[in-house]
Image (tube, rainbow, N blue to C red):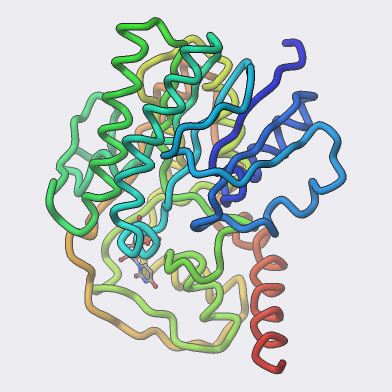
Length: 320
Ligand code: UDP
């Protein structure tokens, strides 16, 4: 594949910043866009002197035009439960107006389009593991609905632009992902547990810890996203690690990796917290030849230096 001009929205976020790195390493020119509502310029600091990377601070809910491009990855949205509940209206806007604006641009420039969708489309799933043909079990007015329904609207809009306008669209349903650049304070389970363990504080388990998640290391996820982007598949495709962990098991894994002596503290379970989540990745395996390679123990080890640096940064900020 030749060199392309690629736009990445949400570029300063955890996943999209890693995606920019991979696209640049494949030889493309990358234009990043972010309104910095939850993204951090620190995630892009290493690209400051990269001539094939450019950046614009821009809210994609407002009309914008970055000029002709070949492909757009629409990765912009608050994504952790704490962030999207704090920024509920903004999350609904980016999943509706933001998605429509980026689809119009893809149509205008006859460009390819990949959207970061989510396992949250399945809500609190009644089918396990989750296969792409399952329509989900979402509370449309619950506290998580600002994210779940925004992402489901995005999928409907993308399917329509493919159907009515022939836009070359792709949708990845992303399952829980972790790794360096995961925001240390965004309330997600891996970042909370790693930070708490390294600070010597109790690990906060919500509920009894029997709920499950399946954790994908960031490099595996980006590999799957890029393979999907260059494929001919228009329907949603799960990308995630199919090994399922209870949250209690996950806490024990974090204690083992960090060597921490922290206690565990049980806290109330948030409303509508999905009880189980595990991707069926048969489609990604057969269609893309994709398979996750990094298991949780190894991935937490690869993330350790990053979380240690976050704890150090906290300490030095507190001492100023
Ligand atoms: N969780 C927890 N302790 C924390 C943060 C999260 O027990 O400090 C639980 C949360 O209730 C959920 C799971 O871990 O069951 C994953 O939460 P996260 O916010 O990482 O992502 P989600 O999969 O819910 O979007």
